[in-house]
Structures are given as structure tokens and as C-alpha cells.
Image: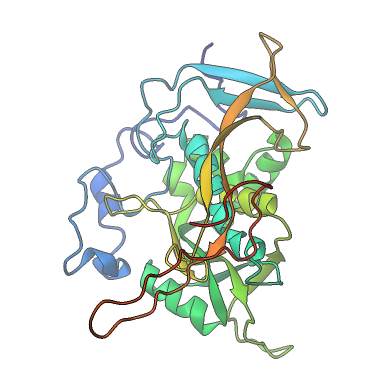
Length: 341
């Protein structure tokens, strides 16, 4: 099946590395953001890859070889069409496969975001908040989240916002096309020219946040919503990761955990993958292939038995007594499954 045409009224398909015309000089984007905005790049940090530009967004790179092979699904309930690549490269830079990467990453990250609820560590559901940053830095984002009262959660950094002169246009297009604003930006001829550098962080976190006096003009953070289920966490993270900052470090980690959501504090007793039907992003209905009329199945990540990692006792001298395995707190394992590590 041929690749679908770009969204109506958005100009020519993507060209070049930035989604703009091929005459754009990449050096202007490389120099647009000073080194001071990326403290991780100094000191002993690993060197940057040449083709990875700091002033970019995920999905703004080169297309993979399988980008022209698609399957189109339709929801049986609302008729919404879903376009999926037949074979995904899974790269964070590929414009066509970035949605697959974001979905896989949001499943793993969403499980950990809701893990304190399963482990009975917190009786309050996580919140989605956002706050401004001076520099695009994980260290600064974590420090500010802790200062706001967060006890743990997940951080996602964003380097861009849509320019005010284009904001209303992309809002209308997103409503008419039932698409994400940033997906439309990615497919448009404007590309990065429609964005402005505005570093900020999103956090899905727990804690008792600082109070802001009513009527005060001081802006500390924005309380967006409370996430009452793991599915809500995954949906929010899929949206956030879909237009996150392109990591300038080789590991390409687009999220960071801290506090009670850290892998050093909480972990599952079992994790794996399972086959599940694709859900419609609009109504949650069953999606089938338009050609074969068969239900579309995808591989999902699943984790069970979230529990706190108990610290082992320290022994100052000699041989210590045998230590029993860590016990599971608040396990959600099915009956009959072992509850020890």
C-alpha cells in the first residue's frame, strides 16, 4: 500500500532532515541553541552524534526503508482510521515510526508511573503537572519537581512550543483531522519553523505540592489533571513522548524516573509481553484491517507484582546472617504465582 498523502492543506510532504525545504542550512539550527542550555553536554558527558541536532524534536529525522509500507485500520464503532507501518524500525528519529516508539515507551513508563498505587505505597493517584525551565536539563527538572513537593514520578522534557502566530491554525487543523497538533507540524512544510525554543518539563508524579496563593501572579507550576488509571497514564505519556525533545545523548532516554518511581525503589515481580487487539484512540473500539477485515493485534508490555525493594542490613564485620528474599508489598499477582523475588 502506498504511503498516504499529507494532511490536507498543509503543503508539500516532508523534505530534507527538518521537514522544510532542502535549501535550509542545518548549521543555523545547530547554532540556534547555545551550549548553556544543555549542561549534560559539558564535563565527562559522552560526545554528541554528528547528525543529532539539539534543536530538534523526535520524529524529525530521516525516513526508514520501510516507511512506504502501511496498513490502514478502521474502528468498527466510530469509523476512525488508523495508519500503521507494516514494519517499524522503532527509531526515535523516524517520522513514520515515532508513534510506534512512543506507544511502546508509554506502556513501559505508564506501568511504572502507576506502580506506587499497585504496591500500596500511595493512596492518592498521580498528577500531571508542567513547569518552566531555564535550561533543558534533567538535573534542573528533578530539582524543581522536588522543590514543588513531588516525592517521585516520571519526567519528560520538551524543548519547543508552537509559535503563537501558528497556534490557532494548527488547533483548527487538529480538530478537523482528529490528529495531534505536533503530528500535523511534523507533516507540514513548516516543520521546525513552526516551533520556538521554550524549554519546559512535564511530570507525572506523586506528593503534596506547594500551595499558591489565590490571585497571586507568581507562576510556579501548572496542575493539568489527576490520572485515575494506568491507561490514563499511558495515554498521557504517549502524547508527551510524541513531541518530546530529541535526546542529544547516545542512550536516547526520553524519560527519567525519580523518587518512589525509581528502579532502585520499586520493581515488578514479573514482566513480559502479550498479544492484544489494537484499541481505537478515539473511542476505544475494536480496529480491523480495511483490506483483510481481520482484527489488528499488537504486542504490549505488561508488568505484575509491583513491590518495594527493601534495603538489606549492613554488616560491619565478619559474616552476616542469611538474608531472606525481599517480601512483596501490595502484590497484584494472580493466585498461585510465587510472591518472592
